[in-house]
Length: 336
Ligand code: HPA
Ligand code: ZN
Image 1 (tube, protein in one colour):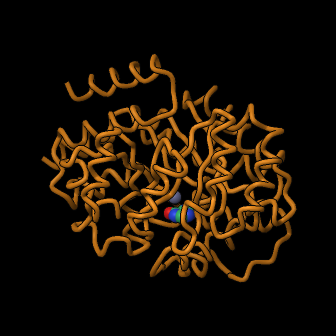
Image 2 (image 1 turned 60 degrees about the horizontal axis):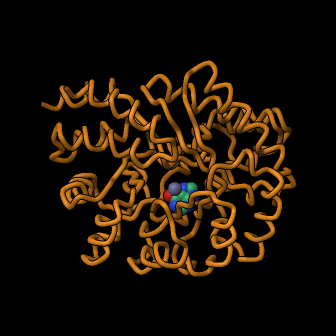
């Protein structure tokens, strides 16, 4: 049974909706870019850096994640990072990606938004042309920074709206509820772009309610803790709200104790529109296919569950109805 599901997971067309491009920065590339940019790292070897990839919670990860991305300085750096991600997932059968980037983290190091975008989008366009991977690019605000900083970043973003497909909210969740950014996302809404925010990863169900009611989100990133609130689950099901769940991330950040206790199957059985994603694959031990493999091997996932996951990813994607129907037909053909 497992071998059939593993085979289907490999060959089915896949979409990834929750990927931080900076979280795809592999240790080897950290060293390569540090050399190229003459940056001195606090780690002497790739092995030493990898040894730091052991986290007890979200914040411990974020400290390493922000330190790692400090080597990204030039357009070429952002291009190489994004291209490496696209090549990897292309080999796994990924045909559509919706990726986050964290502009404030790079602005703090003096990298202009235009440089970040030129590199990331340049690679995304090359991926579309040569690998056939379609994409959306999502500007994510850092919630541990102030509302004023997010508003300043949004002012910069107004010069690049043709290159931005949506807005997100990530970083340290606890103590930084969605309501802190209600005015920021009201401005984003006025721009007519979709919104997705991290909520219910470490934060309480209340943060998911706020994301829905105050930020008027189109998707929820993670959303695991919504399962603690039955009324909230009913609301998410009724609205068909997509949740971008990340099992290997959840395991690495101790959101779940072990994969056998991951709520994915319960979430699917309740009718939640759950999708599978890798979040920060260079740090959490695997790209999108590895996340599918991990849930197949650790949970009582059926063929129908897998089919549903594959469909949910395209249904929740920010693409045209015609594109959706094409991808869904391709998925159904694999499962027919
Ligand atoms: N949660 C919050 N912020 C993040 C994450 C995450 O999983 N990954 C990168 N930034
Ligand atoms: Zn994330």
